[in-house]
Amino acid sequence: MHPIIFQLGSFKLPAYGLLVACGYLAAIFYVSRKAAAAGLTKEALSDLIFYSVLCGMLGAKFFYAATYWGDFGPDFLSRAAYLLKSFQYGFVFYGGLLFGAAAFYILSRRRKLNVLRTADLFAPALALGHAFGRVGCFLAGCCHGGPTACPVSVTFTSPASEVSSAYLGVPLHPVQLYEAAGNLVIFFLLNAALRRSLRGKAPAGAVAALYAALYAALRFSLEFLRGDDRGALRLGLSPAQLISTAVFAAAAAAFLVLKAKYEKK
Image (cartoon, rainbow, N blue to C red):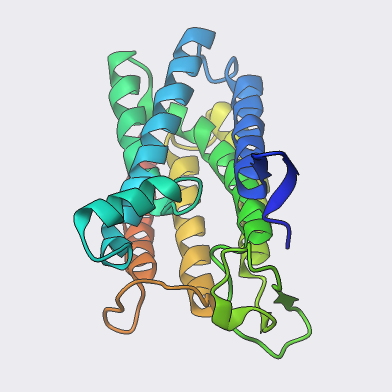
C-alpha cells in the first residue's frame, strides 16, 4: 500500500498519522455541529475533546506496550527505545477507549454535565473517527488480515509496510477496510439514534450503550480474520475478543437498565 504519503528530504508524511488526524477532525466537526442541541458550551466541548483525546492516545499506547512488551527487545532499555522509535504505530483501541472514557467521565462530572447525554453525543463521532483510522491502518499495513483465497483480498508488497515479511506478496483479507465500513454503518445508525435521544424519545445513555454493543460485536467477528499478532489466546479467543465479550455484556445490561428507568418516568 502507501505507508508514506510523500517524503521531502528527511521529512515523511505517514499515511496512518494523516488518516488518524483526519478522523479526529471529522469527529470534532461532528460534535461541534451537534453540541448546541445537546446543551454543551464551546468551552466545555473543547476541554472534553482535548483531555479525552490525550488520555485516549496514552491509554492506547499503554495497552499496546503492556500486551507486546516482551517482543520489543531483550531488556528494558531496548524495549523502551523501540516503543519510542515506533510511537506513530502500535495503539490498542480498547485501551484508548478505556482511558479516554475515564477522562471524559471525570471532566463531565466536574463540569456538572449530564454524563450520559453527553456520551450519547460523542458516540457517533467516535465511530466516525475510528473509520478514518482503520483506513490509515490499511495504508500502513498494520492490523492486517490473514491469508485468503476469496476474490476480496489485498496483497502487500512494500517492505516499508507494517505487514510481517512472511505475508508480503500473499493475498490477505482487507480486514482494516471491513472494520472501516462497519464503523461507518455504526456511525449512521448512531446518528439516527442520537436524533431520537436529543428529542427525548430515548433514554440518556442509550446511544453510547448501542455504540459499545455494536462495535464489540463487529470487533469480535473481525478478529477471526486477523493475521497479525493478536496476543496470547485464552479459551481460543484473543484478548480483544475477550474484552469485546465483556463490553457487549456490559452494554446490553446498561441498555436494559436505562430502558427500564426511562419507561418508569
